[in-house]
Amino acid sequence: MGRRSGDCCRSGNGAAAIRECLFLIWDGVAAYFLGAMTRWWRMMLEEPYRMFFPLGMLAGMGGVLLWPLYYGQWLGFNPIDAHPRLMIEGFLGAFVLGFLGTAFPRLAGNRGWFGAELLLLLSLWAAGVWSAATGRVALADGTFALLLGVLFCGLALRWACGHRDTPPPGFALALSGLLGGAVASGCLALEHGVWLGASGQAWAKLWLFQGFLLLPLMGIGPYLLPRFFGLPSSHSFDGSPRPPPGWWPRVGAAGFWGLHLVASFALEIHGYPLIGQLLRAIVIGVWFALESPVFRRGKIPSTTGNVVRLAIVGMLLGWGAAAFWPNARVGSLHLVFASGFGLVTLAVATRVVLGHAGKHDLLVGRMRWLRWTAGLVILAATTRMSADFLPPVRISHHIYAAWTWTLGGTIWLAALTKYLWQRDAEPPPRSNCPRRR
Image 1 (tube, rainbow, N blue to C red):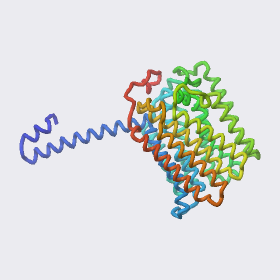
Image 2 (image 1 turned 30 degrees about the vertical axis):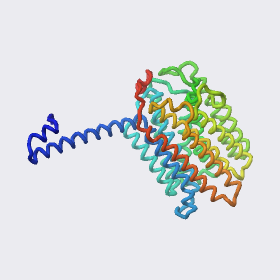
Image 3 (image 1 turned 90 degrees about the vertical axis):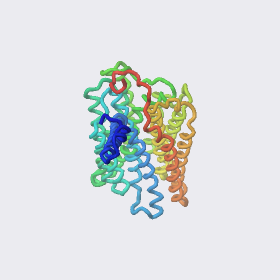
Image 4 (image 1 turned 180 degrees about the vertical axis):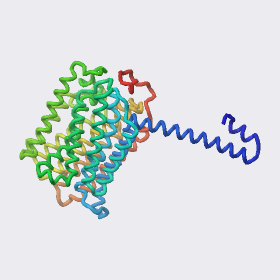
């Protein structure tokens, strides 16, 4: 083993020398790949977004392409229930997994995922996507409930046990969204939610399709979004194992507006859809106006910041349109889902990928490919919305919207794939969190 391969080849011309040379070559190749796989596995445990972001985008493409497949008679079931599951539980769920799995352990000053934990979450997510893609909606809801339950327990235990830092105050809302989403999807999984009655089903669907995403967005946004504009965050505190001064008042404010969001669900379900959806728009608009610079001028030009602005405006317009045109509610809510949740997710994911790759310079100024992605996603959302107002072209607009969204997602994925496997070469800033040292 200590001899070089060249010395070995010169030591003789027999078969033994050849075998020894081949053994040394194979030993070196095996050691290289073993080391590479070990580094890759550790990277996935510490930064699971590298796995879940691209998987989530592929699930989203599959979710929108169910409609062209259905209209082309290549799909054996109507995807009216499978489509939203693939988009919420598959596409957006994967981005939630990747972001929280990367950020929360660092913010809590605790260790990243265990290997078994990652494999369990990945298996549950894949099972849910497969179930939704094959029309088994109840099974998809059940596996998603288990997934969110495992994720919630993992995050809550990292906060309660062995933490060295206190996460930002809004993360209490994020955990509430996960827990509510787990309960809602679990209820829908049992007999397709029929046992809940009409109002119970409406509650569960509103929480799964909107509350599961809005509460984490309200909780994480005030901490993260100011960085998009080069501004400080009022939700960022010095590292401390105990809540620092000013932390609890922020938790109280988040809880106050979060309860108003839940109240908007109750109003919509119990006969006041106009007031409920307008209240939801007011809550989101006021919260982000008070707690983030989304509606103020930033210090740096930022395409990701502008995309977030478009996303928040898209949500407000979507709820307004759904409130005033209830007959076109589903189409109008695509402004909330596609140009709202979808765009803010892609903007945050873009910053996460480029930031962890050490490409902070790319986050300042114009990002033409992200502009193209945002433009195509908005076009897809408005095309889908128009289908409910133009019945004669409804099917064709469904198909156009699906392919337009897929093109936007392809551009995003192609632009960032090469950065998914790069790491910041600079040492991270010192912190009480061992993962930041």
